[in-house]
Amino acid sequence: MEIHGEEKGRFLFNLSANLRAILRESPRHFLKLLILPLALLWVSGQAHAQQPVGAVTDNEVNEVARDIYCPVCENVPLDVCPTQACADWRTIIRQQLAEGQTKEEIIDYFAVRYGEQIRSAPPRYGIFWFFWLIPVLGVGLAAIFFGRYVWQLQKRPSTSKPPGVTAVAKEDYLAQVEKELGKK
Amino acid sequence: MSEITHQEKVIDGQRSTTRWDAILIWGGVLALLAILGWGLLQTFNSPPTDVAPGFEMRFYDGYHWDEKAVAHLDDMQGQIVVLNFWASWCVECRLEADLLEQAWRDYRDRGVVFVGIAYVDTEQHANQYLEEFGITFPNAPDLRTAISRQYKITGVPETFFIDRDGRIVRHIIGPVQPAVLTSLLDSMLAN
View 1 (cartoon, rainbow over the protein chains, first blue to last red):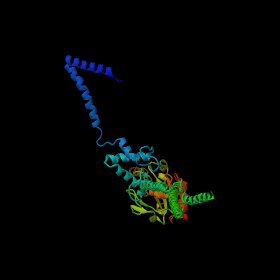
View 2 (cartoon, rainbow over the protein chains, first blue to last red; view 1 turned 135 degrees about the horizontal axis):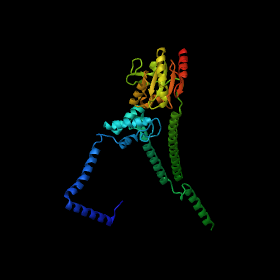
View 3 (cartoon, helix red, strand yellow; view 1 turned 90 degrees about the vertical axis):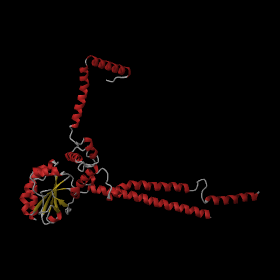
View 4 (cartoon, rainbow over the protein chains, first blue to last red; view 1 turned 135 degrees about the vertical axis):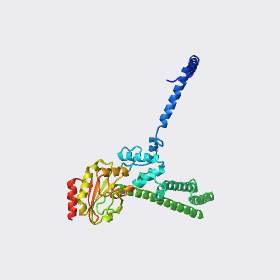
């Protein structure tokens, strides 16, 4: 239930009035009221602190798992893969994260054992650079072709003045005019 | 006249540029198609049927062949090799595990080598599986899935029977049946 505007003001006023009344009439009761929420806060804090040190959450496991692909069931990332093999792998990821290994180290561990195809993206070494360069080369070539196309468009003479034909036509036209004038 | 020649040169230049552009574009398209075709061939290629592809095995701790912790298939030439792909997470593999171990014990002194390759398995679970079934024949992980890709397996279990000359005689998909195993090994030994 939400409290808005005037209602909220009235609620806070009543609360403070009640607390003042309790404090005035029974200071010990007021103290109990103050201690109880504090005790609850302390207990909840203790419960939180009792979690094992270095415990790895599911989100942390999935953060790594989503960049590893199941080699048995193709095109399924490990974080959503339902097979037993994938469950085993997620357990290994959890163990390795608890040991303090980085995401890259864990992915390398799996790539060494199960092949490079488990990676969600090609690694950045050796022949695998080729796969990273293909899009760059593609965009570069497209830019070159487009640039050349625009350059050719600019170089092309205007269509309103046909090349070559103009000079010949002009001479014919002048000859015709002179001929007509000569007749008159 | 000179203007016409100049214009012709310009047109020739444009034609030449366009030709090179077309060659480059079609070359790129063909290269892309070639890569795609190669990828498809790799995917749909059938398993080897003649010469067994060679590979190196780094056996699990406690397993060895001829007192070697690392062996190559070529080292086993002159013997009949039963190459079995399995995984601890594979239910069907459990159906044939006892049979393979028993056959290994029966045939090991007659020139038959059983080799197990754990496909996409964790070391811990693979060792638990080997212990559970008391497997004693040499077993190795399929590191980088290199062996399974060479043999183009479609799943596990799959078993290849390789003769003394290193040729694949039979390829069985799914659990091996006892009668098939013994008759096949007997006929290979007889040959």
